[in-house]
Image 1 (cartoon, rainbow, N blue to C red):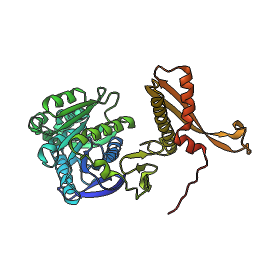
Image 2 (cartoon, rainbow, N blue to C red):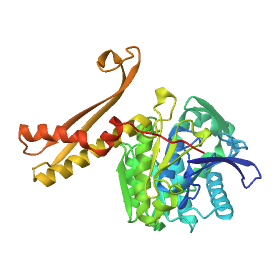
Image 3 (cartoon, rainbow, N blue to C red):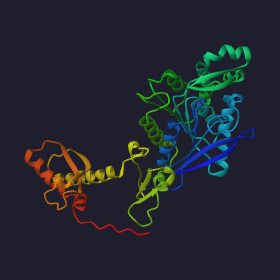
Image 4 (spheres, one colour):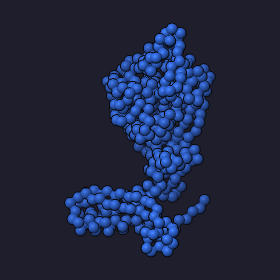
Length: 406
């Protein structure tokens, strides 16, 4: 994954802060824009996680701060929903002029309502995905209820949203009334993916039902069961991203999209790419497939993929399962499924009778097998013996020379 910071001028000449996330090879198959939620920013976890995960599907994703929010210039109090739509169109034009026309819009909460309207206005947009979106932009009024009286009296009021203070003007409320999402959905003829959590306490699940009922096919709904409105649990945002990416492949990505996004191995079997901005997050490809490696959060990583030792375990486990499959087929044994459970750790050589240096540690991999099928105990014992004959197992237990050059 490649990340770069951008600035884009809005309709008033103010600078919008934006971040462009690209696949590791910097060759996106398509571009997407992410619109964040009301009073949020593009650095919110859900925005960052989804944008970065979508790069693994070949997308270049531009996430940006609406005017007056995050690191963007401008006074938030002077903006409104119509202004957000202008920002979206300007960011869309920026991508068209400097990179390529985006084809996917993704929006969270009020940003979801914004991308549905923008999708109708922008011919280059071919699909739109919403996350926890309201079925009517006016839904946001309930967040401002404690400032309504003062707003009616003075024309503006300072309200607290998510523990932060914002000045909201009466014109913001009046502008919301101008936008009817049901009217837009009645006209929109583009694929729509609606993601929403039944437990959302900010924007109720009924909003997703109303959007779905108003939208035309092709339309899809996915329940983010257990998630909160902000998808605070990273697992929820990554699940949403993978769902969006898989769904979008059907409508937007070419059959050879994987080939276009993997790193060139330059004649070797595998290529691995790391950048200092990504902490530990590392991209891996073999000219046909792309995966992400990372370290868990408690080790300083972002937990966006398998750790190196987990990948080592995975290689041994996959090779073991494949070897057992071939052996059982040759023997015509009724082996239906194999589970291989693996754990790697370091152990003191006190546990190793053959080791000379008792103060040292050795690598230890525990491999536990589970078989599904009508197998005798004798057959299971033989399969356990064969498990040690898989090529990766042999490599790990034999003398191996690693040559390093640059």
